[in-house]
Image (cartoon, rainbow, N blue to C red; front, top):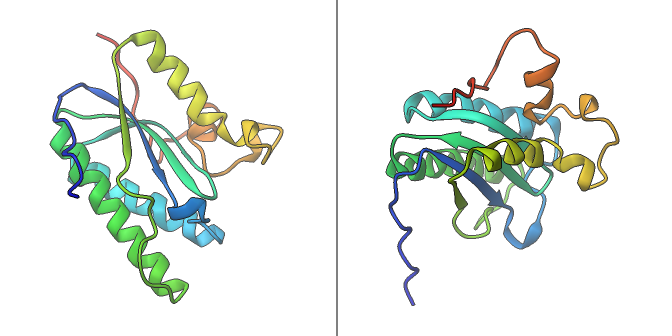
Length: 160
């Protein structure tokens, strides 16, 4: 049975989630996290996506993005997920699916939820009991937002 097409609605903000197939680890070494972030940086320029929050967990990824077009969002995620899956399969001599189906995209319709979403994404490692202090987690936008003088991936949020 063919999958249902993604609804093409042009909301500006989306909470994006990509999970490893069968909850498998998608990041095994620090280099893997770095490769994903490098792909993310290239993709945001290529597809004109703004990134307001992100967190790479061992078996999934969260992002809060802003886009002018949901079709750009789909191309953006397809480019990242294909590129990272190719890296993973070559590095670990694997074949087959890395990702659990399509990415999840939840439109954010209210400004309050936008701020709650940033907090939810960035504190994911605490809820997962990976760390106790967000300043100690290197694969989240938390450090970039609050502790680093220069931005690597994050774009400022401007409310209108």
